[in-house]
Image (tube, rainbow, N blue to C red; front, side, top):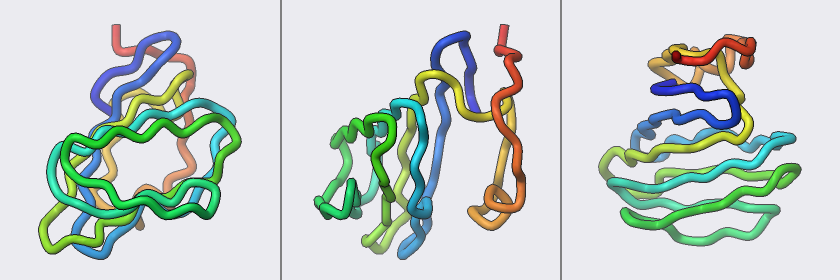
Length: 110
């Protein structure tokens, strides 16, 4: 988590080749932008190819996943609105993130 405000949060992510964020559903809105790499987004069971420069908007309640189908790391960022994670949290791997049951605790960056 890079920055947390009262109503939104900026999170940086990197997915290794063949890695995904894991299918999930949030009760908040989410925005993704792909900066490097390529893959696909699965939004409510609809698969769409994505690559650097693509934006994905995920409305609250939509089941979604992002998968790196390329051969190089996929770098992206996401905006949650409202915040979803504890400010400053860092997970080096997906397994680490899945094992940590942390959530936004109301504390912002500033």
